[in-house]
Structures are given as C-alpha cells and as structure tokens.
Length: 118
View 1 (spheres, one colour):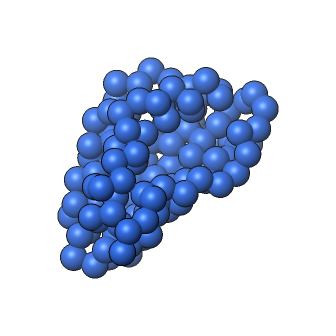
View 2 (cartoon, one colour):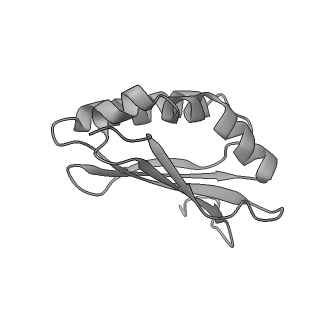
View 3 (cartoon, rainbow, N blue to C red):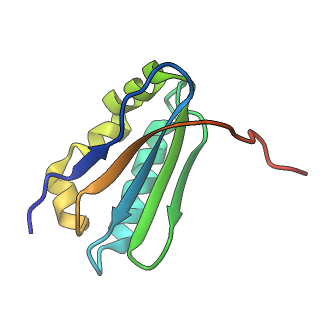
C-alpha cells in the first residue's frame, strides 16, 4: 500500500522551545529496517547544533517513536531541512518499511529536566 511517508499535525506556534514527537509503525517483518532508519537519523542529528535531546524508542515489536527537542522555531526548521528531514522525505523508503505514514506532531516544550539524576 502506497502512502505519502509522513503526516504532520500541530501548529508551528510562537517562539520558545519546540519539539517533535513522531509515531512510527513498521510493516511486520521490516522492524530492523526501521531501527536502521532511526540510526541513520541519529547520525544526521549528531551534526545538527540546534537539535538538543533526541530519543529513538520502541513501544512494541512494530511500533517506534522519536522525541527530539530544539531551542526555538529556527532550530526545528533547520532539522526539517537537514538530513533527518530528508530521510522522512524519501517516500520510496518510507513506503517500503512503514505500515502508515510516520505521524509527526509539532509540540511546544513547556518544561523539562535537562540532565539525568546521579
């Protein structure tokens, strides 16, 4: 089944700290390719000075997520235009491994704890 690769919801919002929460559902049997995609995105993110905390997570055998935070709108937009965004714009790759379009939620960061407790 063909889909557009990504679906985006939420408002851009005003200035302040921003984030994306991305819900990802793998086609059964394609889970390792999704893990590889997350690894590829992380490699891009490590080169992005305006991308802060980044987490790739797994909820179940086929369900994954990404949470990534940015200091402002410009940082989030730089990420969209960078390598991580390019991976999600690869509709052919997304159709080959995702059951549904990745759902990208634009969110505002209201509060956070920046470091792990010792």
